[in-house]
Image (tube, rainbow, N blue to C red; front, side, top):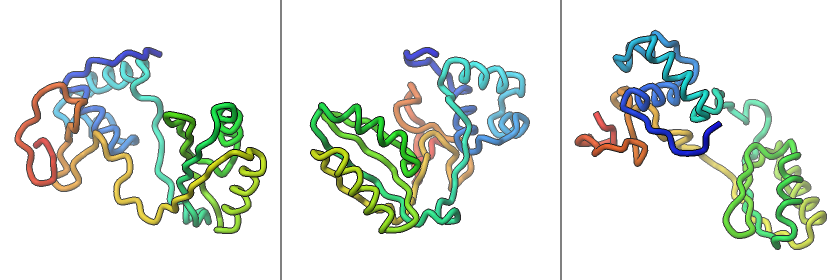
Length: 180
């Protein structure tokens, strides 16, 4: 897998946007939506997968429907000597959905719990195991935008190219920041 930045053209970006919007979309639909031939869509997707740009295809889960009523962001600071052990411990926990290493000696984690009490027990155990840990918790109460970068415009349904990924000057934007 390559680590350098890939050079993508407008066709690549349109295809990537379509897949980001719906990872299960058919090649036929992506072709129709983007105006790019099915064979080129297939070839470009395969190349993006082989180059490591597309790492996986996944689904969004309604965690509350699974009984996980508390979704919490944990911001964790610790002395440098504890960071690797704390990171490994959190990575093994079934409560941790996502884990990020931050600058300095910090970690951020998205944790899932059935109850407030389960969350408290987890954090108490973590602080007991790693005495110098500072943990701040922030319950996620709403998720107004999730995985929205480089997806289809929700207003006009056209594929969009956001931010610095498009190495060209953006077209005139309409009110919802779509490039169409």
